[in-house]
Length: 485
Image (tube, rainbow, N blue to C red; front, side, top):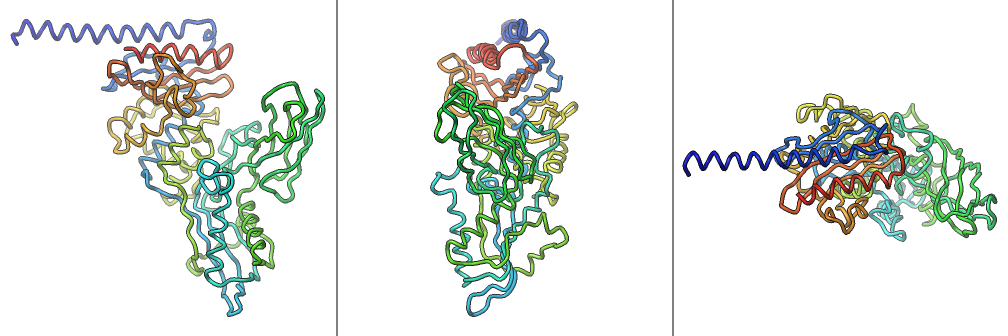
């Protein structure tokens, strides 16, 4: 090829590249120019395969991003712990066993931060208690028939802060505000079974709570209303057995289930095991105790006998569920497990510090403010550049790029993106995480265009006018255009 032909080719490629960049900038401008976004805070970044920003608006502006913050939790866990990592729960016996099968001592349940124990995401309703049977079989295998001590639950590996900083009173009592624990069970969720009145404004009745929590005290103000959805809220702090139920539920329902957070998972799992042993005829003379209420006693596990190890699901599976179903509890557990495996108390604070330090040497983290792993905290500050930098790193530099990519829901097909771009140009072409809170809407991930290009993108909008569904439609329009490039 002569020099003149080469020059013409380079000019053609350059003009085509410029044209595409110009086109994407126009798409971004079309998105932001609307009445709904007049007073909104916006951060948008779109990058090409090489990581170059080819479309942006306030790409360095840090904002609360809702659940797209989970991308940092899931990517960090993959990078630091690996996809095959499994958390574990261990059963120890403390004391001696007589020839008659009497344990003169206690049984300890030592938590290791497994979020999948009895989880609905990994167990059918009739199998979520199966782990208790395995624990009982371990007790029987060493010949124990009676226990002179009690069951002691130890969730101290994660500390006892539970709810991350800046979670609100509105969140903590509800299922999506269930905090992480060294001992987590049934997704740290309670189910309140309501019977609602046949009359508008009538007071509902709580039929039962599952699992049964001894001593729970509920002030019920939930009314019946001519609606078809759950508009009830549960208020209550971690470890408190006092709960307030407010709001409204549909008229005339015989068993309407409202989900709330489990007040004290450490205590609940001990009581579940205690009752399961009793059903098998194995009695404990003392009541269930928790390490939290035995602060002066430090267990020496090296002097105890380990009789069973219960392994949780693989990290890869947990991450897939976290991103597909946007499970706040799992995201917080991932953060805690990072700290725990790095020799610290497995708290959200310690995990976030380690995550931030990890990414400091890999992407530009200036202006990145992480408070939790799930995005439930409005104190998080994340820009579209932070998110697309993370996405680019996971695509091009991570040895777990395939696992990360496969963990993301697909537009029109799966997870929280099932309705995004459904039967539109972007259907099946977007692998991304969504984020939704009151006055916050965000998406971040990858677009596979119809011409074979892959764009990484992040769109964060705070304090928009109108409905979340209305902003979603505007975002769909932008994503559909990217999909067609």
